[in-house]
Image 1 (cartoon, one colour):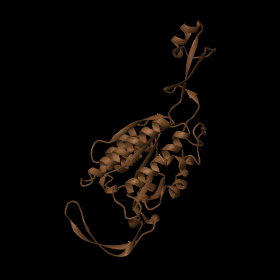
Image 2 (cartoon, one colour):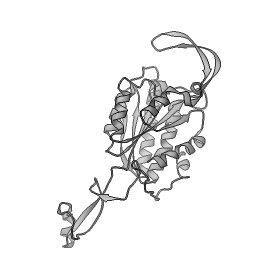
Image 3 (cartoon, one colour):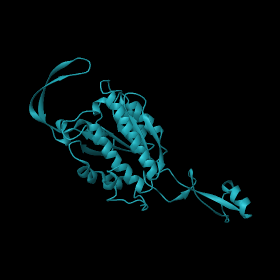
Image 4 (cartoon, helix red, strand yellow):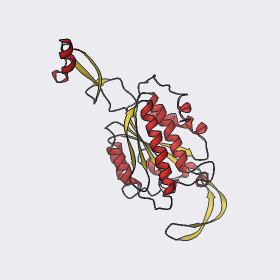
Length: 282
């Protein structure tokens, strides 16, 4: 909950901003959405299908319901808590850095009037919170995310399931025009990952917070012993690699997906300014 103060620096509850581009924040545009905006007196040209029977019967005058277009308001935070994310050499696990970044993004979106949901991916069934609006909804997202991470820590010895299936589930949980924000290191993306992302971009906006450990970004020169969960062992030669050379980032860019790099070694105070670019992207 302490991360909310970082979100508050760029957005305060009760202040809603209109988006420069579609996806992920409140639009006070009235239309035929799913959420009732208000009930008012009938005027010429109103749709008779929207007559509010209760208000009409109560007042003796025709009243109609108006609806808020919700297509651009839903934000789904997708937290990758699979075993490979439970790793870190400085400050925090990658999974913790992912959760921190998503919390900041979520509080900002909630402050702007967005509906925030969560899909936390582990080794079992994902933890899901349907997108809803308000501070209470975001608090529920934080609580479920914390419990999902605790459960992931208890299953750290399992193998990583592919990410593509969970990503497909996440896309299906969003209304058209929503904003899917995935925080992941993209370990074991799965054979259908690229296809799922391409299909997702035709329906929703997708942004990836690409989380990396300091060791991944710039490993000290040397030889490193390793052993996989399958028992394969060997040695790796460490070499310095700049973020621009990261093949995961290059893969996402080639698919047209916006990427925000998140270094697990950096605390929330340093990560928060990087996440402000999401405000402009929505």
